[in-house]
Amino acid sequence: MRPDIRLHLMVALQCGYPSRRLLYDELTYEELREIEVAFAQEPWGEGRADLRAGIVAAAAVSPYARRGHTPKPIDFMPYAQRQLAGKPKQDEETMKKIAEQAAAGFRKRAELVAKMKAEEHKRQMMELGPVKDIE
Image 1 (cartoon, rainbow, N blue to C red):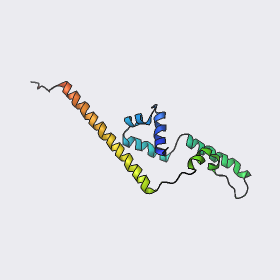
Image 2 (cartoon, helix red, strand yellow):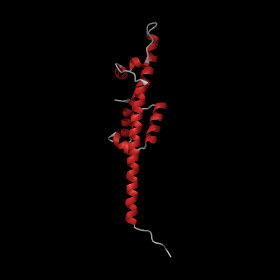
Image 3 (spheres, one colour):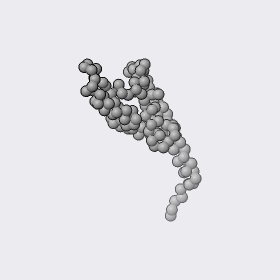
Image 4 (tube, one colour):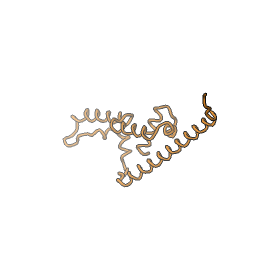
């Protein structure tokens, strides 16, 4: 699963949405981007907890390690090791394509929401009827 999709799902579940699609309905692109930036600067969740545990375990085992075999936190994070195994790094061109596709999707969603809001406003105005002059 792509990391951005995993983050969106994690945020959706923490906010009480059973699906990331429902989260997308509620947030604007800018709000979702803010969450992504905040997560990049200060990650949260189980992955971060595993890293902290790996750091503690590596520090605890380090005095007993053979010379030249200093343990690393990743050595104590089997889930992270499985994720990294065989996973090719994305090149810059692939990342740009993914970003462009996401931006296009968010633009399309924003246009649809704007159209729906305009239609709702028009419907409400029709219900009010013509404005009468007060004399």
